[in-house]
View 1 (cartoon, rainbow over the protein chains, first blue to last red):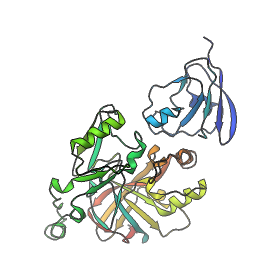
View 2 (spheres, rainbow over the protein chains, first blue to last red):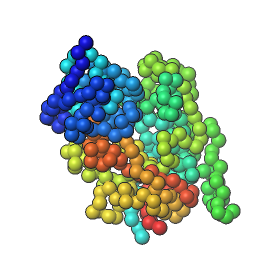
View 3 (cartoon, chains in turn blue, yellow):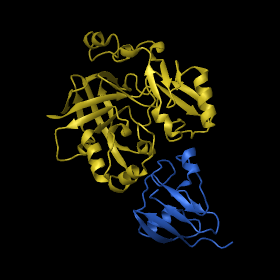
View 4 (tube, rainbow over the protein chains, first blue to last red):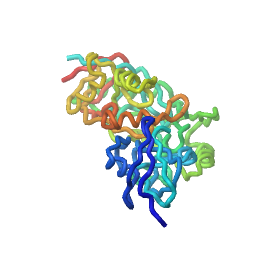
Length: 95
Length: 262
């Protein structure tokens, strides 16, 4: 399986292409790329990095701040989300 | 030096549910009498924060809890005697446990006469798919500190920065305040480490800024989520809004009381 090497991120109405290393979370990759992605605790508690996974698949070690409504809507925690397939990822903070 | 005024006083009979504005309160080392007396604990919650709240069920913030005892729960019955008989003041006796019973009305208008009714938890479990139970204590279930303070000016400024109306109730504070200093809308941030006297008796020390979670994203009237508010706080205000206080001297507080910087 080829891994995801970059992903699309939407923030403040702008699209970015973000390189991502193996095992990195979407948030860590975004911050490394110099993007001011909303975040705070980075431990899956506060919910600040909730974002809409418009495409792709991720795994999360914890997802406690996501309500059932959030999950139905396709929200993830960027600080926990690690790509889990080769499907293209599109993460949208402007949901 | 007077630095502000109490705009309104709020307590939350059930942690996570809608709060109630009250005209005056007794605030002890464990916070406001009647604040967050009941909570709902989820078996699948984290060990450190097992509470079922709006983070798990957005509409939970619309549930209305009301003390059946009403005015009896505003001030301890022997408050005046507890101040006058002994130095430095004896902790007054709170009303008996039965006085803290609450009725609950859900967002759908279903009314439970007592939160302890098995039907309330049974229905909530059915609705949420969680294993739940009520936890009750007469001295409050707080996440972090017993007293929270948030200014009217901070709510207004955040609204201005975001271009949206920000209802102060999103921040679920105990004391909403008006600061004399109109230059700094987030004046409370400058008070960390300072001691304040509120009203005639209460003294608090501001122990820190209040780090926020997704609870503030929920509209207190609709439970609709506005993620931009929390995102904005994180990117522009270190994720904080309002301050926490610890109580140094217990006392009664009324709406309109002066806030003095000691």
